[in-house]
Structure formats: C-alpha cells, structure tokens
Image (tube, rainbow, N blue to C red; front, side, top):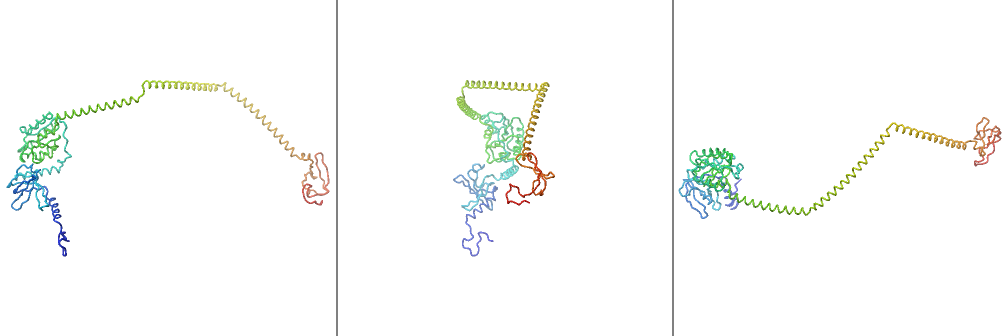
Length: 465
C-alpha cells in the first residue's frame, strides 16, 4: 500500500498529491505537539525589534540555527536586554509558521548561560510539587477578612518591611509581628522556613506575609527553594507570598495561599482600608436606615389597613357580653334539665325501692294470684261454655244424621230376619220375612216380588222376579 502522496503508475500529474497547506498543517500539529516547553541554548544573532513591539532574533551554534520570537507581553518581563553575541538559555515552545513554511521558538523565558541550570532545577521542583498536589488551587485557603495579628517574614533593614508597615498603618492599624531573616544568600531559605513555622505558633497570628523586594534570579533563589516551598505548604495559617518585581512566578508564589507582585500589594491584600470600611459601613448604615424607614412605613400602612378592617372594640365587647349572657342562659337551662332528670331518676329509684319492699312484694303477689284466679275462673267458664256449645252442635249434627230423623221425613228402615239393614233387593229372597221400621212403629212383611231398580232411578220397567 502506497503513502497518500506517492505516485502510482498511470496517475495523472495531480493524482495522489496533497496541497502544501495540508502538509504544513500536518507538520505543525506533529511538531508543536512534540516540542513544547523546551530549553535551548546558543548565541543570539540578528536581533531586531518589530514595529508591534515583538523581538525577533536567531539562536545559533556551530552546526545549526533556529529562529526565535519574543512577544511584546513577554519582552516586558525579561530581566535582561537581548543583544547580538550573547550566549543565552531560551525556554519556550516550537511553533510552525505556515505562511513561510518555517518553524520558530516562541521564547517565554530568557537567561544568561549561567542561569540555565538553575531554571531547570526550578522547573524540576515545580513538577515535583505539582505531582504531590501542593500547587492545586483547591488546597489554597481564603485570607481572613480582618486579621487580629499579621506576621511578616522578611529582612528587617530592607525596603519591603518599610513598605509593608507603612501600608498596614495607612490602611488599617493592626498588630504586626516581624521575624527578621536573610532573604538571599546561603542558608536564607532555611532561615525563612524556620521563622515561618515559629510565627505560625504565636497566639493571634491569622496570616503571614513572606517576601522581599525585587532582584535578579540569583537574588530570588531562596524563594525558589524546595525546603521553603514545603514549609509554606505545611504552615497552619494562610501565607501570602510577596516577591517584588519578579520576572516570573517563584515557587513560593505557586505554593502560597495568595500572591502579590510587591510587598506593598501583599499588605493591601491582607488588611482592608479603614476609610473604605467606614464608608462601606456608612453606606450599609444608610441603607439599613432607609430599609428600616421603609419597613416602618409599610408596617404603619399595613397596621392602618388592619385597623380599618377591625370593628369597634366596644361593639366587640358588647357582642362578647351578649354571647356570655346567652351562654349563661344556656347553662342555666342545661343545669335545670340536669336537675329535673336527676329528680325523675330519684323518683324512679325511690319507686323501684318501694316496690322491692316485702309488703309490696306480698301485695303484688296476692293481686297477681287474684288476677290469675279470676283468669282461671274465666278460662274454666269459657271452656265449659265452649264445651256446651260444641255439645249442642254435635247433638244437632247427630240429630240431623240420625236414622230417626230420616224416618221422621217418611223414610223406612228395612231389616232382615237376622236384624241386618237391607240396602239391596238382591240380598233378599222371595218369600223372606222382613221388618219395616217406620217413624212410628214397625211392620212385619213377606217379600212377594223384587225389582233391580228403585222407583226413582230411570230405566225400563223390569218384570218382577
């Protein structure tokens, strides 16, 4: 497989080619990503300032050259003037400039050759502290609004302490504890760290300023010391680093809870201005007075509105008095009802008690016995009357159903010689003797002839048998 820009057999003049801008952009992304934050040393040549305030020069050695640019914002912070022939250490990023297809070093810091090792050591310290989280913004503590006592670690005879004290006195007079130390030279960093730890243990110290006036890289070496940086990070109270006129942030600036470009600025950050506080307090007092006046006015209007809605107190008292009278009347009625109910219950209980007396019990039992006797007499008489009536009814029924009653109506009873009542002519033989019982008396007869049907049944006339 061929690379994109490689020509293949049969390709046209442009087939497989890429634009210059695309190739340059690819190189730019690759180079700039791979060469960031590099140190380069060499000799300055062709230094020329541009109209926009930028500085262009070439850094060279015996075998090669590289174009360099210092933007105007960075040039103002450089501690030295760049001249041709100087041997310097440059720190910055490689940048590809597409319009000319060239690369250049964008210089961020510049130092004489003797400072190169020191800058590399400082960067190594910063990397270690960053990896341990000591440079994290999250761990920085806020400064107290109005500290009780301010600690200052600096040289006693330098301009920094005079600036700090005069600024504190002018802004807000406060108690100050000064720890006089060496701020440059051998042993200065350790002395500053010990003074910082000692001030932090003093009662009432709420914040500590650590710093000095301006100077070169060599002068500020103590504030780039790792021992001092760790002492600042371990300090139990907030620390303000004030390294004046520094060309770059020192390690102490990065570790401290707050930083100021000069000792004077540090004092301004530590305490507020008394006159500004007084003015702010006056404004707040005025606003509070206005708010209270407005609140009183609003409450007065609200009270007036409520008072307008309230009825006359005398009428309220009269209404309450009337309700009290009604309640008293209702109470008297209720008490009277309760008393009447109690009296009725008392009478009921008295009557029940009287009824339970043996004499009353005997009287009630005698009355009950009399009543039961009367009921028994009535029941017996009723039973006798009902029996008599039933007997009469049965007698009448019996009379109606009696054979003698039929005889009374013209019927007769025929009996055979053996006394049987004859109901069928076929049961009697011719010549048999029969008795005929009438209503009055009886007849003895002999059967001379028989018929199958009686005279009332329809049918043909049968011959006698």
